[in-house]
Length: 167
Image (cartoon, rainbow, N blue to C red):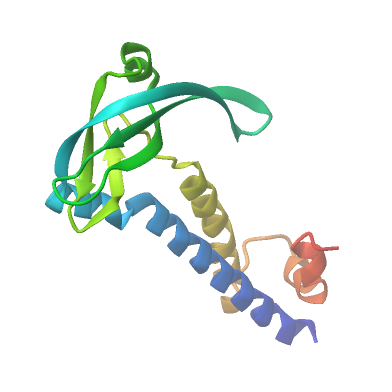
């Protein structure tokens, strides 16, 4: 029974790994960035206010996040109000009422990026790490070439829920 279950568990691991790796790639590349670079227009935005927010993306360590709230008027359409997390240097330099540069898509004003805006890559890194662990492990289980101690494949095959940490 373990001989049949091992490739099935391996296939599940491989599929999960590929899904997580694909999601990481999508989050890392961000197709809107390319579209903004190719078709984006610039506008001057007025800084409305700025805040420091607690950022817990580093586990239990709380780091400050620097956020600005701004409004800009695209060439066509109504004014857009938004907020963005920006780098600390720019945050310290600007004050409410100051202009900042915004890059936006003329076809969709909701797609925009403020000057100095930071990308959040933590989620992409976490998904990539999960994919990098599960996909090779699943491939090894499917192929039957497991670089682990003897009995590991049988253990995973007998108890996939335990191996996944569900039980």
